[in-house]
Image 1: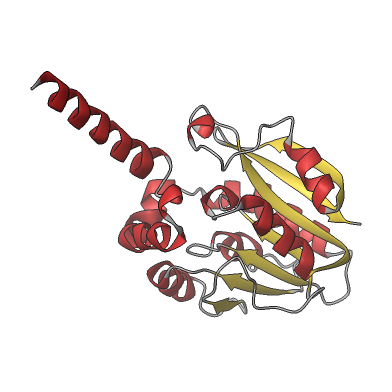
Image 2: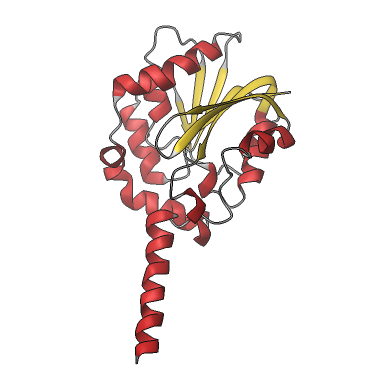
Length: 221
């Protein structure tokens, strides 16, 4: 009897760990997308985005980086409800093209509605493989995504592939207290620059960004 209770308790803890901490990442990408479909209508409330903060610490740096390219093309992988588009496209300093890629049907629908008229484009697709030719973009952005993909290193390699030489990657690396619990999906803060360099990036710069994430810029060599 006690053994059965113990096993049941362990099973409940494992379910809570996978769903609450790992957001289903070990159960496959379709399961992750299903969870995000369920949470889509509450997503912005959960995240509590601050428009002015997002503009200052996300939109403006991206706009500044894009100014180094003629007619810059940008890709946001795992765009969610349009976080990047909302912080970037309204800026008068931004004169590029942004494609928002999102696999969740409901997240995409909400994002498309919120960003209607800003000039960005929405595509429903997976991060691996990306439905674009080699060297299609000047800047590739991916926030709070790679730890929820089947193989984070493959995801980084796809991002590298669709960047033109000299193009920039803006990506997050999860570093909060729960990060070590997402087994097999997380890179330690000190290791992440070397991971990017091994993929083929250079000029890696890491910035503490949020409680659970670092923000990382890197350039395709």
